[in-house]
Length: 159
Image (cartoon, rainbow, N blue to C red):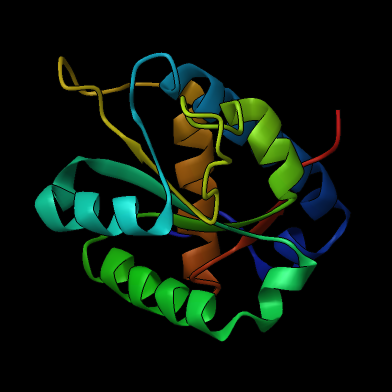
């Protein structure tokens, strides 16, 4: 069931809601990271989706301006989006990879940078995750789908 009209999503209320959802997304990532519920990287995400798609609660596809022209990356995104839609996994496009790197640490243990183009948030193995911030993000995704916006875009603000 849709909770928002097009006017609500595209008007002044929209900017406030987008900010609210962006903050909720930051909370989700910050709380999922120490629980080991984050999968980072296009190939790692594809492997995880193949093994256990029911455990994935959110998929983030992140780009910066220079990535828009990367045809191979856009093909990966298209395939991941199709898989997520088919498996009822909420998807968000996220701008501001620098902010994502700040939230997630940005480097692997060996010191090389992480591939932040695709990030999966999964349920902890011990229990089903009930996070109010995750509920807010998932509600936003659901409302956008009702308005035929299957992959909404969130701009993470600088800190």
